[in-house]
Length: 376
Ligand SMILES: NC(=O)c1ccc[n+]([C@@H]2O[C@H](COP(=O)([O-])OP(=O)(O)OC[C@H]3O[C@@H](n4cnc5c(N)ncnc54)[C@H](O)[C@@H]3O)[C@@H](O)[C@H]2O)c1
Image (tube, rainbow, N blue to C red; front, side, top):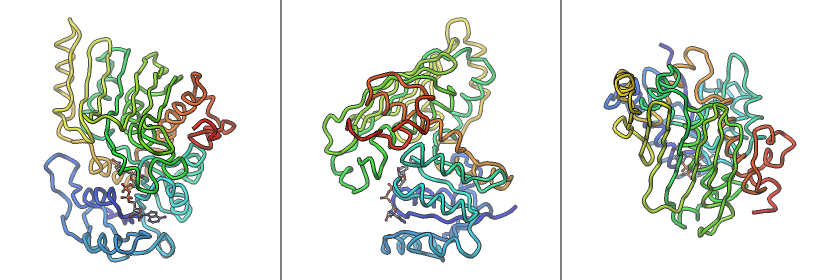
C-alpha cells in the first residue's frame, strides 16, 4: 500500500482535528484506533511530512505535538522539492484560494477546509487548476461521510423511500460576540459571509448531497445583534429539481444549539438531530402507514458504525488518491453547495427568487457573496 505524503497549512484549531484524524485512520469505524498511532504522524495510509503557519509559536507547538519534521512559515519551500501528495488547507477562508492554487499548480492535490473559497469566482478558478489525472481539489464537508448519511443516500437511490417532498435544514448554533473578535470572522473580505457560508454550509451541503440539484431559492438575511459586517442569521426556501422543497435556517444566535435535518419522503420521515457531528443514534426513521415493514427492513440492513467527521472523510479521500480518482467532496459538488450559499445572499439582497443560472460570471454575487457590497 502506498503511503501518501501530507502537508498541513494553518496549524490552528481545526488543524488538530486533521492531524488527529490522520493519526487514527483505521477504516473510519467507531472505536477503531487503526493506523500506526505513532506520534510522528505516520500510518500505513498517510504521513504528515510538513506543516506551515505564519504564527511561529503555534507552528512550533503543533510540529512538536505531532512530531512533524519540516516546519515552515508559509508554502514557499514546502512545494519546491517534491510536492506532497496532499496539502490540507486549514487557514482562514480568505487565504484558501491563493494557497490551493499554488499547491495545485505545483502538482499537489488539495483538501481545503470549508468554506473552500470566498466566492464562486475563486472556487471556479481553483477547479480549473485541477487536471483529469490529478492533482485534484477536495473540500471538507465531513457530514457526508457518517454511516447515517450514506445509509440514507443508498435508500434514496434504491427508491424504497419514494419521492422526497419536504425537507427542513436548520443550523441553530450560538457564537457570542467574542467569537467574532477574531480578525477574520464576520467580514466579507476574509470569511466570505456570516453563518450562511461559515456554519450552515455543513448542513446545506448534506441537504444537497441527499436531494441533488436545486433550482430556485428565496431568502432573507438579517444582522440582529452581533457587531460584525455580515448577517448573523438567514432564512431560505429552496426548490430542488426533484420538486422537493426545503426550509433552511442558518443562525449563530440560538442558545440551545442544534443541527436539525428532516426529510419527508412519500414512505417515511427521516430525521437527524445533532450539534457538530452525528452518530447512528442521532438518526430516526418513521415509516408512513402501510410501509412499515419494507422501510424498517431497508433501514436495518444499511451501513452502521461510522460517526460523521474528518476521520471518515479522510478514509474516503485517501482511498480515492491511492486509486487515482478525484477525492470527495469534488469541486463540482462544492460548487453546487457554494452556489446555494451565493443564491441565498443574492436573494436576500435583491428581495427576489434566484436560480442557479442567475449566478454566472456576470452576476456580482459570483464575484463576492455580498454582491456589490452596497446593501450590507
Ligand atoms: N470542518 C469543520 O467542522 C470546521 C470547524 C472549524 C473551522 N473550520 C474551518 O477551518 C479553517 C480554519 O479555522 P480555525 O478555526 O482552525 O482557525 P484558527 O484561527 O484557529 O487557525 C488558523 C491558522 O491559520 C494560520 N494562518 C493564517 N493565515 C495564514 C497564512 N496566510 N499562511 C499560513 N498560516 C496562516 C493562523 O496563524 C492560525 O494558526 C476555516 O476555514 C474554518 O471555517 C472547519
